[in-house]
Image 1 (tube, helix red, strand yellow):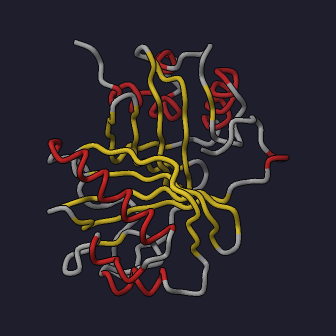
Image 2 (cartoon, rainbow, N blue to C red; image 1 turned 45 degrees about the horizontal axis):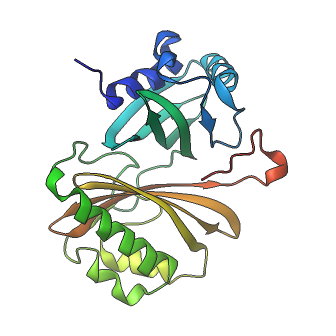
Length: 250
């Protein structure tokens, strides 16, 4: 039986912790394209990264793992001398990982509703609704977050049942609307990709956070055609002159 993308990437990420070199074979060294601007291109960059991280007594936990066609996307927690939360995306070709994106943020304390950045449901259901759920999230991000039509938020978000995991917000549509109507600290400019499996959908977007060029990765859980739960990470995008590869964040 073929090993799933989920199991292969779980093993790859866990090898950061264990030092086991075997899972790195899932990466096609000749084709690998790296979109983390702080990591060198190709297998040498990956090996160097894992070697550096191994010295910090790292801990790696893949909290959620999903597949969308040729893509794996996962929600992860790391301890690399400091605790971080991330999203990892890999594109597969001919059974191997050939491209990688990520978005990592320092882990923060539970939010005003007592929710952490990773707790909540982890397994995808409603696989037959993948396409429609993807469309809901794309429309929400483009209409409400990018275009700023905040008055339409309840077309996409369940007004009576919305769980929020952003460390700075609490549950409910009112808190979300207030944050989006705030002083311009969150500004989405473009959605680059939307990945989905069943009732979980991940959007990869670009914009500005507190005036800084940033990447927004937002994971949504859909129920009854509306968003009922949200997790995210925001990461500052370094200026191009500081990049270790030329592939861009997206």
